[in-house]
View 1 (cartoon, rainbow, N blue to C red):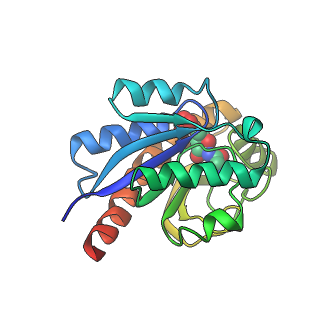
View 2: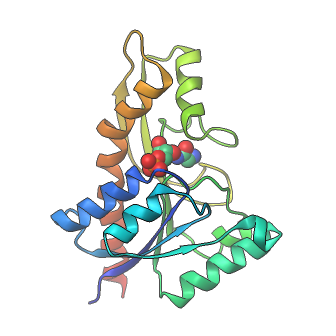
Length: 202
Ligand code: GAR
């Protein structure tokens, strides 16, 4: 049976993409292969990481395509063209509509930097999530990997990991700790788990 073909969708720095690339190299991900990286931002450093790893890249710009529908249609076209079976949102800062998510039931996964259902949904992304956690005063936060449906951050949870908040944390310090201790650990494990399930169904 061939490995599950994975596309990673990114918008920024791509440290989660790097964790996936490293996990494939080290054998943590063995039932899937990252075949494509798609960015909705031409300047995303994540694209550089993909090129360095020898992974094919594509850039899809919503502004150029005019509408969310056209943007999602173009994403679908590229994913189909590359025979993609599993889509991983790794710091992808665009909300995908029902027309898109319904086309890939339990075939899209996302990493979110909090313990869902806290600090999630529309407007909670990137550093804002950690700002909100610190403003609320919670003592524990973490990361969640979940399937993606039409509800932002609303799909079935695959893995979660808790991270302690410390006295004097800034949003930046907390973001880094959540990445190191949680996101970079659970995202590769969840990807391997789902890639294996898809492979076994073939
Ligand atoms: C990560 O913390 C990721 O969980 C978050 O953005 C960061 C991207 O970093 N994603 C969201 O907030 C999605 N709602 P990266 O580009 O270095 O992986």
